[in-house]
Amino acid sequence: MFLKLRKVKKINGYVVKPNANLQRAELTNTKLQGLNLSGANLFAAKLSSSDLSNVNLSDADLSNAKLDSAQLNYVILNNAKLEGANLSGAQLNHAVLTGARISRVILRNASLRNADLKNADLRGTDLENANLSQADLSDCDLRGSDLQRANLSGANLSGAKLDGANLDEIQSNETTVLPDSFLLL
Image 1 (cartoon, rainbow, N blue to C red):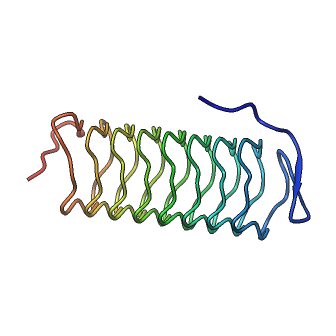
Image 2: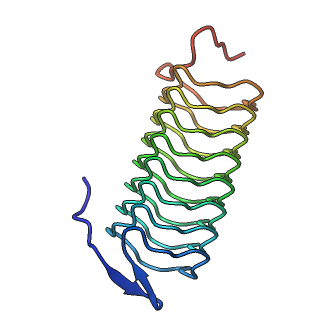
């Protein structure tokens, strides 16, 4: 399941720890697995192609961060701010994003298999071609989001708000749970 979280580490001259101020930090292609960065300020940080697997980022600010092609498997992002972040091609399998603010985020071609996104704010998010199979999207706000060609096989969207969402060519199966009175044509 989750690894034991390490407390403090110095990487590229930055002290990486809970509540750290890493605003605009250059951490591209860096290994950060298993660290506790809860409450950290990572506003506009560059973390492209970095490995943040098993990292605790609860309550962290990752707004406008560059996390494209990053490994975020089993990451904890409860109540994190990710508005405007780029996570295209990122791996967020088994990630916990309960209550996260993910509006206007780029998650194109990202993998969120088995991710927990309950009550997440995903308004206006680009999820084109994303893998959301087995994800829990219950009570999510997906209004105005682009889910074109997304894989929703086995996903739970009960209570989700889908007004204005682009659902063209989505993949679903008999185990996909849709909001009440919602039909795919």
